[in-house]
Image (cartoon, rainbow over the protein chains, first blue to last red):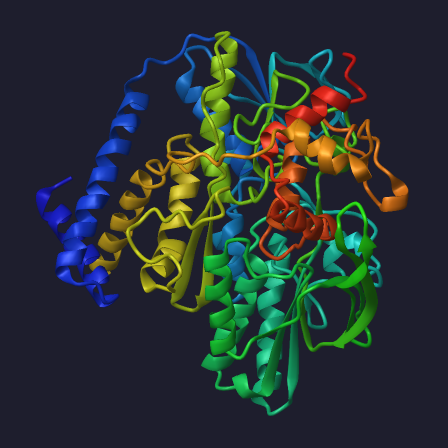
Amino acid sequence: MEKKNLNHMIDIVDQELKSQGVSRRDAMKMAAVGSAAFMMSGTAANAATEAKASSAKGKILIIGGGLAGMSTAARFSNELDNPDITVIEPGDLATSYQPGQTLVGAGIWEKSDVMYNTADFVPSGVKIIKDKAVEFDPVNNKVKTAGGEEVSYDFMVIAAGLKLAFNKIKGLGIDQTISTTGDHSPVSKVVGKNGITSIYFQQGSEDTWKEMQKFIADAKSGKQVKGVFTHPNTPIKCGGAPKKIMYLTDARLREAGARDNAELNFYPNGSKMFGVPEYHEAIVKQFEARDMKWNYRHNLIAVDPEKKIATFNRHWKEKGAWDEDLEEYGIVMNSKEVEVPFDFLHITPPMVAAEEIGNSPVGSGKGWVPVNKETLQHVKFPNVFALGDIAAVPMGKTGGSARKQYKVVVDNVIASMNGKELTSKYAGYTVCPLITSIGTVMLAEFNWTKKPTPSFPLDPTQERYIWWLLKVYALKPMTQYGMLSGRA
Amino acid sequence: MKKLNTAILTISTLLLFAGCSSNPDAGKKKVYSKTPAEVYAQSCKKCHGDDGAGNPKKKAPALNDRQAQEMELDLYDVKNGGTNQSSGTEHDVMEHNMKKLIAKGYDYDVKAMAEFLEKSFYKHAEKK
């Protein structure tokens, strides 16, 4: 890089720091700390690049060609001398940029900005089978596709993503699960119409913007309107998106000068905004500042699309009887159904592992593929690994998690091929660029310590314009061209 | 626009280098006053049973049907009140109990406890 450019970059970072109320001296100190960290990690990065390509051998089968699966395939291709890699992926749009769907839902991006063809991201030399793996026989190292093809492997990496279970919500008339980028017709006959929306599938994100515009127009015309935003009782991908779309609805209403006519209400199943206390508190303050309301412990169970009523299971804890074993009062759970009328409903559907995997020998009682949460190796089958949305890893269902996980999987599979110990470990890092308005983002980074783990020397609980730039301009090219080529 | 591009380049570059340096496990390791076996014998077994088979009357689920690594995730969930932003937890009751038990000194390392449970009780221990 030219020195002039570098200086210019440093100036901009410096200005950003100062504009956030950091003195020049402090900025220098932080820069020093930052560069120390940079040098340390730089050494590791150099070691990785300089390491010779591995001559390890084995037939690698990857289930799923989304972001996690295809990045893994790319990295294996880069690292191995003679790679033998097969990816089974039925979808044409599996490598689409899902994190952008929030922006599509709020009319900031077009749907075409997030659509990417799977075929364009298959690394050269990697064989792709355009089908779905439906039978798993990990004892004999084989899988079978829907078309009847039998594929054997030495190592299998499961990165099949998850399914959106709109069918678990009564009243919508939906009888099957869908995937984010696959055939959405069973769901979009009701979701994406009449004020019922969901950014969790690609077409749904485009339809969300259409419905949001009607909602805003109603508010602007003087009608008092209600927006309801849900969060289910299952693990979900991108845990922040249910709130992000609410923040963006708030921003669009303000832009239209119609915020006073709308009531916005968040109904999550859980009883907090975020698992990390620092971020939880920051979000509560942001909600209060925007007059966005919330009701914890409400799980969406039914929707009446005609009457526009959402039914929630409201559940709470009550003091129970004296528990002799506990030597304390226990608690009992109580619940009742609550009906909430809406003009605009954003549904975050329950999410499940694909049935054919969840119920197979590589699945688990809960469906997710059980792996060692650090090495990402299957708990029962040592030559099987899993990453991404389908892995039973706490907090791990984001592209940011996958970005840390795929390198761990590649390292550990190659170590296994060489008969070595699995030394590469995933520390639970994940990131949620929480969009809080048009122009601001809180970059919530954390791991299993449940403490903020900021990558930058800036207070991570603050909303900043620079993270908006990161979210809207930088993360997509980093993902589509850095990560999917197996490099970043 | 040029400035914007440079800013984007800057943050992208920073991000590429970031995240590699933090090691969450570095430094202090928590010390527990009791071993998992002691905690189980003195507390857990009152509800989950001598053999980890559980007790429907006490709504205590079986602990003998999962291997250590899967169990670890459940124990982690119990001690952390759920592992997703606002999804909540299916372990509401045990989460309450766990807080009380920790206050009484029955704390444990989730990994060590999960390994103890598998070694002691796992009912599918025979190889497939």
